[in-house]
Image (cartoon, rainbow, N blue to C red; front, top):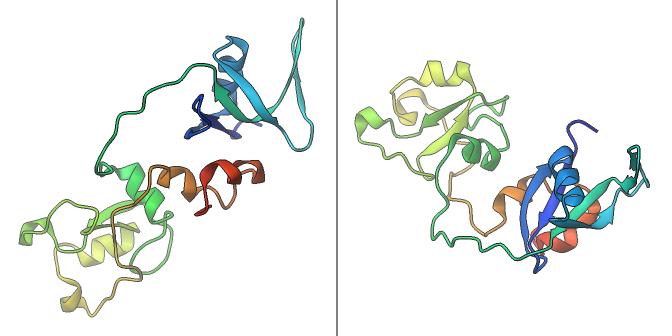
Length: 170
């Protein structure tokens, strides 16, 4: 229950984010959101004066305007989500970020030049080019697309009740 996530929808049923269960319950209790789908197992949270079904999907009561962004900002968390925490060189568990074309050699800090990388591969590569090492990327890095790309990363292990709200890519 402690690590459980709940899909938050805007008043228009547009997916906004995945919240921790505790935050979702607070939104419902304060009247700022309503439960759209409860837990498929039928679990219920009990308090002294009320009972609440464990939410899987909640919807905000009022519409929240989401600022439009032409590009997805490059962040460490976003990059790790995009690469699914897998090293771009060996496929192991990624812990760091590596610039494919090193910044010391003029490489940009962009979605197309950054990959998730394990510490061992990052240390071995240092500021050298892939051709110098005889290495190849397992996947070509690209900028994520779509307004809900971060939610789609987790859709494989998410509650099946989320899929209708995440679109065809889920």
